[in-house]
Length: 472
Image 1 (spheres, helix red, strand yellow):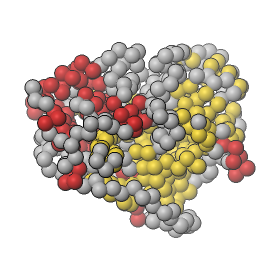
Image 2: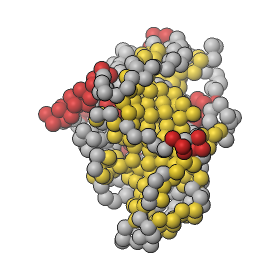
Image 3: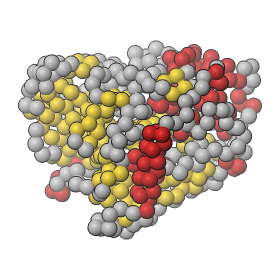
Image 4: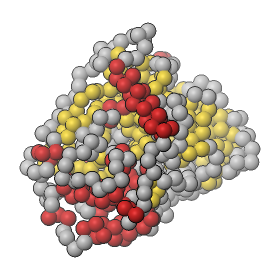
């Protein structure tokens, strides 16, 4: 039982890190260097509905770079869903294929600007623009990927380089803080039907409902649900009440602790992301996460495991829910350029939270409710009163500094993936002396209240037109 385990109080060092994060967020909200040009704020999209209000808009431009570096005697095992492979063998050669990188259309507190999605490729030198296709778009298809995940697809072609290959994706988002009208939401009954976007958040996903090899993990999650509600029918209370009650039970029983990721090297930050530093940039190699079935039995694991189990528990109760993986601008503030984990390499950087769908069927209003399970877990070691409003459940004061990356731990299409690093491909790579794969995230333009911080652009201006995204 959770109450038998005493949670250690935060250390002075941890408190200092938290204070640094809050100070960084405050600085981000108040100003960026006066030397940087101010840009007029774009009109805020009409997002408010009777259940959620959006405020504190941030315009974010982020860049993700997948790097492949050659060096001797290194083998990185693939854990592909359907096509596992090993990178073996300093000459790098890629033969054809496509890279699949997550590009969420929208989350509970963000909207992607598709005209800001661009792609590029480099082989030992400068980047060159490549067209990007969007797969799984909510408005463009009737069959969504599980959780409504969407991917930017970049054709690789044939590339050869002695030491270095890289692929870049540039994405723009509007980010918001949220204010949840819990009183109104508490009146919503269980819907008889769900819109496609919500129904997709009940579809099976690796680590949530199945192992990477495809074996079901639902039974331990169902047992955990039964241990929380007994013989009662969860639908005897409203969807919102059910979500809050189960959240309170889970964070009371679960203990966050370190896990070991699937690939060697680097160091773990305190959220169990396997990172490796290179100058001022920290790069992601994998996430330490356990499937929901194993986590339901152990009730221990990393932040990512906690979020993943929460999603599985909601779905088992019939509540559409999905993971959001992203990075936190508030922990990575620098002058005019934002790169995660630059204040302290063991600060969060890459993080995860979750959201569930509330559907007002009578008015046809779908509302995604953000739930920062980890932040809730850090508030107290006691059961929280699920009949009272909580910060970080619906209302979230930091989401305007959380940049979303993905709704899945790796792509749902037939692809090879390496660790749980969010992306995948169906290309073939030969590396004579071995290769190391990493993903680097950088924030190089942030706009709040008409003030902007800028870093170097992704591509030369002459290359931008050919790199814009197209719908598939």
